[in-house]
Image (cartoon, rainbow, N blue to C red; front, side):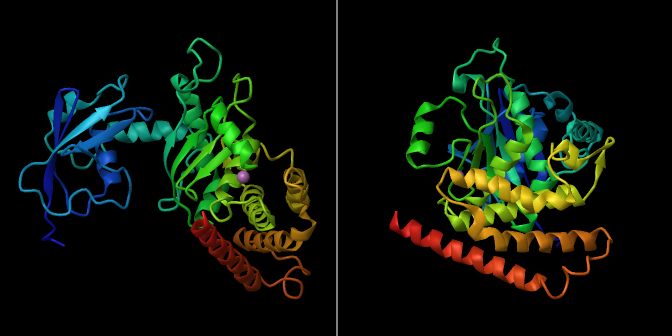
Length: 376
Ligand code: NI
């Protein structure tokens, strides 16, 4: 609407100020303000910032509105940045009072560089269903010294971003309409946390806080010399995502987990997108493990191993997982323009039924979760 009222916001950081001229409305979210601030000052991805307004920290999320009414005076927002963060763009930006339209050449180059740096090429996260931010552990947090040979926090950060943009993970996030606020690196040597997790019979390779508000993954190997193999990391992430519905490691949990594994693997094996001469399945380290024909037995084998630790066996949940596999196979064959196999179409399988069954299962899981919440 033409009557939308724009207003300006002043930002100051490390003694320098910049005004975002007429770029805000009352519908601006915390997330947008954080993004604009990062761009205005040219912070690097790994720099952490906090915005303070009238002494309060502004939330960096896509649901909180920053200003409920148009401010009468120019709002002054204080930007706190980690001590090693450097303000890069302030000089060139102040010469240009209009900081709208950040898509300048520099920004485009930066984006292009990021895309080149991603192993998935131009594949990115979905616009709506995604991980909002990433947090690697810094060496201070787990006590190693920078001279030691464990990978740098930058590398951990990139690995988290790689997981979030993995086309198989993106497919799951979209399919299940998930938004995770933070994907973090689990502190590799926090014994206290490990003990707590062991006590709950839980996961040692990751954890899920508040049904997916935050997910942390153990990225480094036990000796901290490197990262765990990529296929394992992706599997751990899927495990943690499936805790969004079911907290316990019960049959319902493993059914959901197995179905999500199917969604991940089918996407990689069937959507044969090629990045710099390699398929995404190769890039995800899957090409030597599975083929189109072995996805289902592969998942069952994996489940047998994982479930054993919890005294369970996947025999009882074979049917719903197989059904999901068939559903996905049909879906991808259609999507890739291939003909459906003769026997899997009408009689043995009905895609709507499967979908409805899955819905019902997830609803049941949700009800259970709510009941558990009430109890605890
Ligand atoms: Ni778990």
